[in-house]
Structure formats: C-alpha cells, structure tokens
Image (cartoon, rainbow, N blue to C red; front, side, top):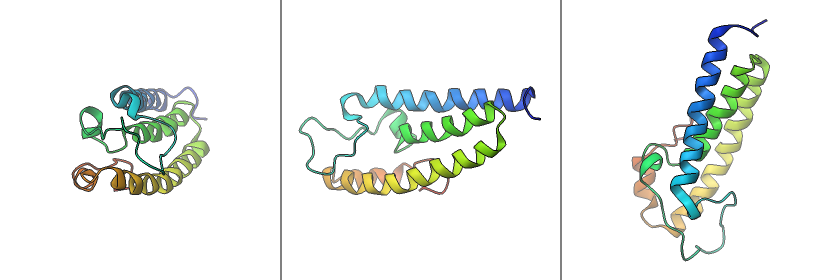
Length: 127
C-alpha cells in the first residue's frame, strides 16, 4: 500500500500546514467579521469588508485553507479513495456556498464587486 511512503506523507503534511495557515490566518485577520453563519438578513453595524492580508490573496481564505487542509489530510493518511471523495465533497460544498455568500456580501458592500474582480477564490474551478 501507500502507507509508509515518504512522498505522500510529506506532501500531505505540507498541504495540511498550508491549508491550516490560511484557515487560521482568515479567522485571525477577520476578527469579529468572521462567523460560521452567512448573514442573509441585514448587515451588522460593526461588519466590515476585509480585503487585506490573506484576503488579498483569496476572497475566501478560510474556505481555501479548509479545502486544501481536508484533501491534504487524506494524502497524509495515504487514503486515495478519500482523497477523491474529500476533493469532490469539499468542492461541491464551496461551489454552492460561495455564490450564496457573495450575493449577500454584494448587497452589504457595494465595493464587493470590484474586490471579486481583483481577487480569486483560489479553489479550482470556482473563480
């Protein structure tokens, strides 16, 4: 089997660290602006659009980080079936969630459309 091979172990470990760095960077950088719930009603008074730091590299660095962390965790475990399944499940989840969230962000922040044009998600096939 693949377990015990150095290449998948090191690639998986690097990917997990990379993804976790982006995920935690997004949480820290956004501060009180980061929630796990998508606000679909009205904008909270203290809510600000964060576009600097990791948010200047990816529009959704928390999602980007989680995407790569989840797949890399399965590479680290040398589980090729789960690599495929985690890739598909993660991609479908974010492909549904990001447009829904961005519709509300565009409503809350008129400048969001410019930001969206400048900064990609960096999740494959999700612009």
